[in-house]
Image (tube, rainbow, N blue to C red; front, side, top):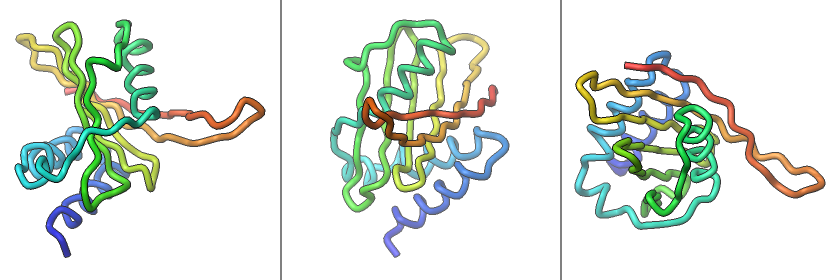
Amino acid sequence: MDPLQTVLSELKESIQTASDLAEPFRLFMSNVGENLEFIHRSKKTRHQRIFDIIKAVVEKRMNHKFSAKKCLVLSVDGAPDFFHGACQFGGTIINVFYFQDIGVGMLATSTPSESKMIDYYRFRLIEKTDKDGPSAVHDGSTTVH
């Protein structure tokens, strides 16, 4: 099995089951986000649902105005259902990863400060269709470190 697929399988399990959301984020950063092979297999893409989730967290939980222009979302060659990326605004950095096949992902937000706190948000994207067409519903949990 491709080493990337092995890591993504572990990460997919962790994002669904972890009670401490720092665990899947550390797994992502140490095995995916800082892995040069993985980075070279990534390419810029547009994923409206991921932007919608980031916008909801930024505007509702962090009370900031969101601009997708300050975000980069990437797809991965060989992993068509996995997306990852980052945003930056007003000193806040957001890292995101999302498994489209299971509709689950997470955001990690940090603001450079002496506290070094990171807020983690797990979300589940549920596609629903009504008379206005498809839309995304997100439901999430949070931990802070």
